[in-house]
Structure formats: structure tokens, C-alpha cells
Length: 66
Image (cartoon, rainbow, N blue to C red; front, top):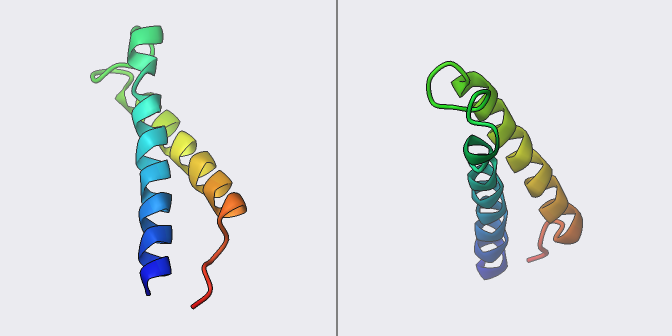
């Protein structure tokens, strides 16, 4: 069970970290990615970044064995 908890925490951390990096787009291109008109685009970018990071985590750390 300990391995599962560590594995799940790592996967969640990868997703949160990637989504946070997606927020950096506000500083790079604030006219497109912002919290008003570009909020939908910002959310899409954060979600895609999180999915890619979680997929990379799963490739490196597949399901733990009991």
C-alpha cells in the first residue's frame, strides 16, 4: 500500500506542476492567455500540459506492484 501512495502522490505532483507551468503563459503572451477573455485557452493549455506530464510519469513509473 505504501508504494501505491507514493506512486499516486508522484502522479498528482506531476500534473499540478505541469498545470502551474502552464500558468506561466500569462507572462509570455498575456494578450492571448489571461484570466478574462483568454481564460478558456489558458485552461486548455494547463490541462494539456498536465496530461502530458502524467503520461510521462506513467511511462517512467508504471503501476506499482504490491
